[in-house]
Image 1: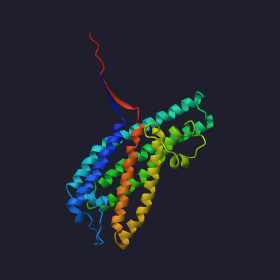
Image 2 (image 1 turned 180 degrees about the horizontal axis):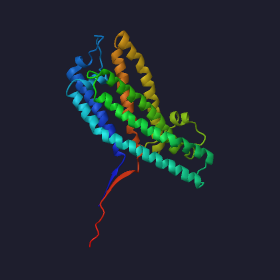
Image 3 (image 1 turned 120 degrees about the vertical axis):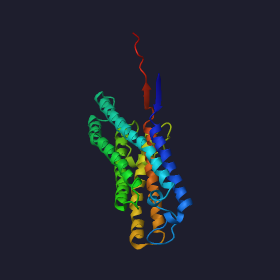
Image 4 (image 1 turned 45 degrees about the vertical axis):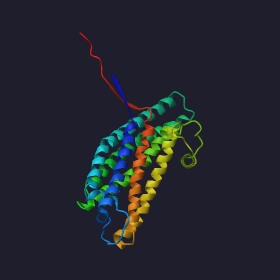
Length: 281
């Protein structure tokens, strides 16, 4: 008896559960405790609560979100392992094809990419792992319980998310894009911003393009959020809290979408459960 399960279900399930948790939590907070979750030290009207106030203090939204994130923890850790495994396998295949003379690029170019992958792959894995554990810092320690720990967890999550996105996109480029026939003379920017790829027939290109765009958006959102964070924290500028909250929710959304796109990278990869037949005596 053999049972096969597509590995693509890991990031896809994570994306559905995580996004569902965010949307349902925000809806419950606004419906049940709008005035309380938008209340802050500036004592002004706000139209949108931050993630911290939405998930941290009131039930049932706090419980719904934490339960949803608990369900995704195994999926995220499994995705990290598979990302590392697939990237390492692609690096070894690249080196083997170069040694056999099947690559159109010069051996020095391929060897340079293999050398870079030697540190990009473990860096990407480490950054992604730290990101997952940093998320626990702001999900399970609310701002009202311990503000400093909560803030450190969230800022660490955002920073290591960007570092992971950058190194992971670099891994994808060197393993699946750089030596692809027809892309020898194309710049990375043209591949990202000018290419129009199909998610069905050009999965690698589609995944790389939109992961790169989401990574850039993530960085710009973080930089943009700093202005409204300062305006709200130190100057109590009208609606600055709500504007900062928009950036917070968009940061979380780019994270979820980025991880969900990994389902394309796992296409054709399966978990197999096999029962061996016992030999009869």
